[in-house]
Length: 366
Ligand code: GDD
Ligand code: MG
Image 1 (tube, rainbow, N blue to C red):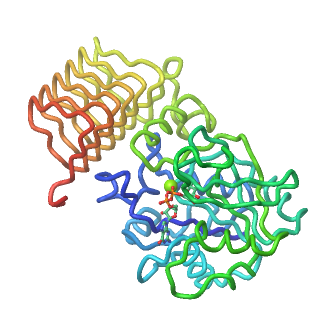
Image 2 (cartoon, protein in one colour):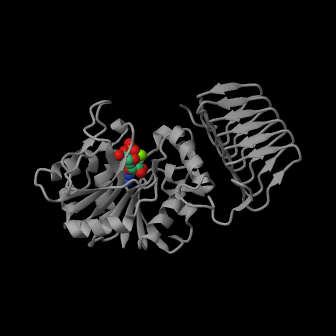
Image 3 (spheres, rainbow, N blue to C red):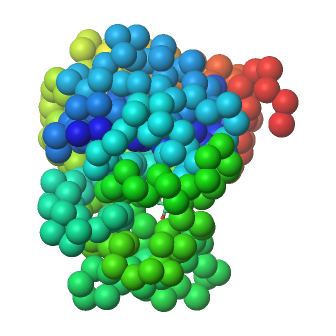
């Protein structure tokens, strides 16, 4: 079966990380998010994926040089300009000559949804399109989808004002579609499946269905959710070990490859230390992930945070509820807290106190 993964967005809410790495290629617990999504798709019988691309397209080909991810064959449909979600689906489907039932996923949703059961539900209903739904506390940042007991969709309200959502069941960003839906999308235009295609399908009942699921689900698209996804993966929400071949050296503490933890350093679960990571004496790493080659020098504290590959935290630094980009440097005694996000290769000067800051990578003007 073929699937289209929508990865054309700029990931603005995850800037500055997404200035240099497209959102789907950002690691979640040291594995590119997209790799996790592709293995989930493969586990439900998907063997060919079309990446619907626009933003930083070369990064994807560079990440998957063989044009494959495990058993999944990859093809790339690069949009000349952003075509929106429905426009992107049509463009990608034409590119890959899709003429049979297919799956579409948003490229930023980490989930354990039972896609096999969803395909069955779709076939049983004879639906033209089926939307996976999950439940969230505040639906205002999502597509809100009330249904009849049969699963037929009553309405599709994209991002209603707070307090105005008719239900807490939201579009989880996975669809099963019949190829006939492509005829509903005007070619070469920017069209939103959420704001245009789905609402218009409701003019004639019986075509659009939705399946509610309480399976694990998170949209990784903001710093808060990106950190939350890491905690969930570390604690087993999508299965353990958090990374293939990681070793559990103490309950909830995982190592990849060869890791150096100096005497007097404290690692508190849940934690994942990537290959070549090093933690100096008197330092604490708790509830956090260190990428490959990340270095935490002496007397530093890394709490509920993500430090990407080859970043360096000098002595006495403090990183709490923050994301440190690939190859970034925090000089001595600097602190980054409260959802600070440091871009790849950025340097935070000694003694700086950053709270909720966004530091761009060198060379990017904001
Ligand atoms: N190819 C392509 N072209 N992809 C795009 C484009 C485009 O022009 N615009 C956005 N995308 C991709 C993004 O890369 C992302 O994977 C997906 O489409 C959804 O875009 P987001 O920007 O992440 O949307 P959202 O999170 O605000 O809302 C969407 O996801 C929610 C669930 O997380 C909607 O589908 C909501 O209805 C849904 O509830
Ligand atoms: Mg999103």
